[in-house]
Length: 488
Image 1 (cartoon, rainbow, N blue to C red):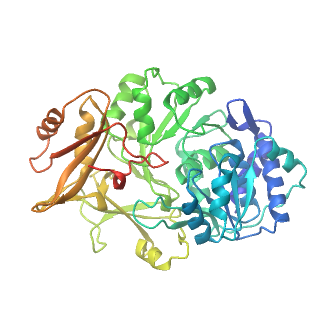
Image 2: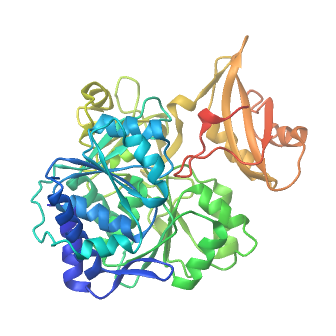
Image 3: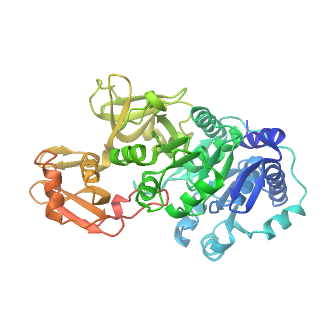
C-alpha cells in the first residue's frame, strides 16, 4: 500500500470535485492527482527514488498536497519541516535525515537556501503560478511506487520540548490506517468541508485533516495561519462542518467578539493538549456545539484514543482507544495499575511508529515489548475511560507532596479573568520546588485575588505562591504552551 493510492482511488470517483481550497484557489481531486503525478515525474528526472528523503517546507497551501503525494508516489520519504524554522534548525534536520532535496515555499527561499548549504540537499522553490506552469511541461509518472505497509512514508521531527529533536518514522500503514480510522470515527463523507487550520507539516494536520479528507472524498479548506476572525469567516463562507484544532484555537474563538452560534459544525475535535473543562462547557452553552477530545502523539500517527459523540462522550476524559489500538496505565516497572490509580499511559497497535530515525537506543527505550511509553501520566475509570493527568516531566514535587500542574491550571481557567495559564515548578532551597503560575488575562485581576481564588479550591500545598502576568504565553507552532520557554 502507498498513501498516494488513496488519492488515485478518490480521483477516479470524484475527479471534478474540490479537494483543496484556499479562498479563490481550488484544486479538484483530478487536478491534485495529475499535478502530483507530474511532480513525481520531475523528481524521477532529478534521480529521486524509493527510500530517498525529500524535505518539504510549505505552509497550508494547496501546493502542499501536490508535493506531499508527489513525493510519496515515487516511494520516497516525506520530511515535513516547519516553514518558520531558522537556518541552523534546517541544517540540523536535513543533515540528520540525509535529505536529497528540500522543496520550500518561495517566501522562505533565503532561509531555506542558507540552511541547506553544506548539506547534501538541493533546493527547489515553489512559486504560485510558476509552479503549475513548470509541472505542465513535465511528463506525469503514472505508476505509483509499490510500497509495503511497513515502509517509511514520513519522518516527523519532534518539537524538541523534551530535549534533542528526534526523527519519528511513520509508515504507510501507520498513517493510512490512522487516517481511515479518523474518517470512520467522524463519519466523514463527500459533503463534508474540513477546516484546514492545523499545520499540515505536523502529524495532527496531516493525518486528521489532509489524509482523512482524501480518504473520505471530502473537501479541505485551508488557513495558512490561524486567526480567530479569519477562521470564523471561512467557517461561515465555506460551510465548514468539521473543525479540528488545539485548545488555543478553541480559546481564541471563544474570546472573539464575532463568535456566535456555530451549531453548523457537525464535528469539533480537540487534541494536542488538554482542553480546559470551562472551555468545553462554554462551547455547548454559548455556541451550541459539542467538542470531542482525543489523545495521541506524533509517535502514534497521531490518534490513539478519543471520545465519541453524544452519550459516549465523558467531559474531561480523552475517551478510550481507537479501533485496533490498546492502551493501559502502568507503574515504573511496567505493571498495570488498578483502576483509578495514576501511572504512565502506554500504547500498542498499528499506529505506533516504526522507530526513531537512526536512533535504536531511543527506540528501545520508548517501545518495550511492543508498547510505546508515552511519558504521559493518566488513569482509567471503572467504565474504561482514560483521563490525562499530566506529563511526567511536568510533575512538581513540593516539600515531598506531588502536585499535578494540570489540576491547578484547570482551577485558574475557572476564573473569568484568565485567558491562558501554565503552572510550573521552580527551584526552592528548602522545599525542592515551589509552584509558579504564568497567566495571560482577558480582564484585570490582582495577583492576590487570583492566588486566593486558587487557594480556596485546592489543598494548601498546591496553590501557586508565585504569579506572573504576561500578554501571551509562548506557543509552539502547533498551539502547545511551551513551558520550557516560560519565565515565572
